[in-house]
Image (cartoon, rainbow, N blue to C red; front, side):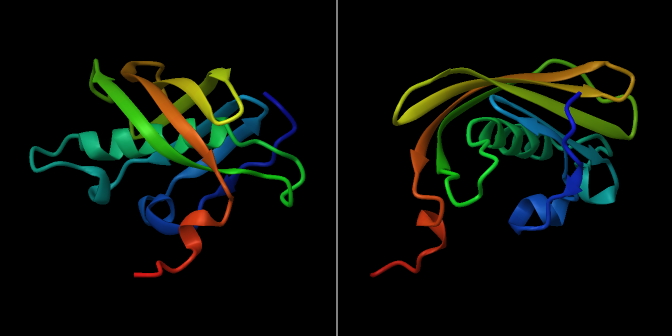
Length: 142
């Protein structure tokens, strides 16, 4: 574990779902979420969309680490493949994501989601394109 100070993610869907960035460094990110009623499907289990969103957040963070916020790049998801391999058996899930390879314009990342008892919930592979950090915040000109 690094010297990173964990923090709640407050923007957009990550904030609405209660995601917490628990570790972040070059090529690596970990995000957790405590499961509550918001995260469940109609059968009462963890919704697959929450798992996929957690993976997208973690794989997104792992590729844009930069200690100087002025130099940080943005990114957009190009491809995300999720394999749901088990059920969460505890109330917290943690996604660990790592950059597999990065170029000038895109990067590849992989992720694993476990519950707090280390039961494997999902695996994933993702591809991202780097963007201007504020590209998605600009109003459209349509």
